[in-house]
Image 1 (cartoon, helix red, strand yellow):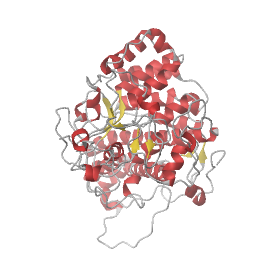
Image 2: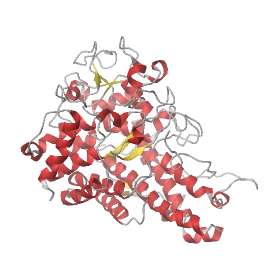
Image 3: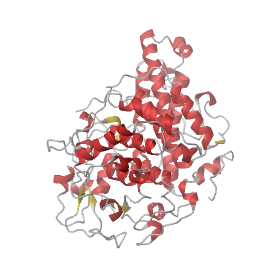
Image 4: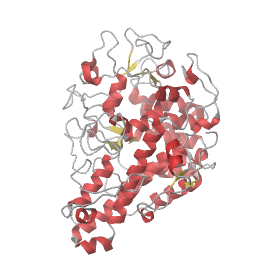
Length: 525
């Protein structure tokens, strides 16, 4: 069982505001645990840090639901991973969703509007975590801790916590910038209940994130599982630089290679067996750089890896051995939700061990988007089974962590950046890609292969499918709204290749514009 000491919610009695709304005004009794009283307790400094980390995995202070952070009819939909995964995968060539849900149908048809609820859920979750980060930074200055009489040892520990919080805040801003483009920047100096924040351009947000991450002080040492470190910071910058032509219209591939050299030299190594990266004991993997940590007993919910397994598994495929494959109870943890279309499963060669699909009794084509339960392929990538074959601690909520950043991604990013003109080592690029192909049992590649930029979009799908990067990759290759077609793109079985380029960005949620006149909607919405 993994050590959850630093990751999950501890008892923190703080009155915190919504990400964009002012605090509700309440009358406090003399015995109420106000923020001033809470921050006078030295346990709060680590406890609130845990709450910020938990913002990536949990939905509230009581799992699997209860004391929810965000109000919504389905609590699980408010989870960071579920909302981000939905916006990054369900609109791409990697997933077809079978639920008859208009908000999801619009996503996979590329015909959404600003009132789609998934835009609100993702935006609110990320800005809520940013609000927690800002509150932490406001309350942990040396001056305030001195006033409260906080011991020097706690103050020193908190200086490292502050740098973690700055990086976690920057990560949320990165994902907001990637999906929404022009977004507000709200920092600790803005306070609570101040004037609504104005939209910043994508270039301004990019520069702010870059400055924040480059200006970080001491971060935790590598090896504290689930916590950020200098290599997580470098990976974040590398993600930004790889996509800089999309974000700011400028190539930054040299800087991307520099950051990836740091990550690759950080002591991480490839997991020998690909499928072990996605099982119940993947916390032992030497490849994972930054995980979102789950535990079947201590950190549960309907918006984490359990959601992904739920989308993978189906009760309506005859003979499917759900518990044997996925390590969960099929009657409660198989949601009969998604399929891999042919555009994904046909990418793999016969011997490629990354092709984790179930095909017994399944057809290649998906003809019916809502009742074709034996059409396409079931994905079997994420499971609640360990490498020895045992199941996790619970048959509903998996122990499996989500590998947000991992070394294989860094390898592919390095090689792609070099292929795009980055000042890296082409022999290293071939070495890195070859290591992934060898692990997979796939055919060998040549120097000509890895120098061809067209190699990387399908190869990233083979290595990273269902890991949340596909929309970003498709946009970077100018293949999301145009130049590439897939099954049910545009709402038809044969697909519609070309769509309005406005869909390369999501709109700001309609509800946010109604309460903040300082926001400016993205073009075309």
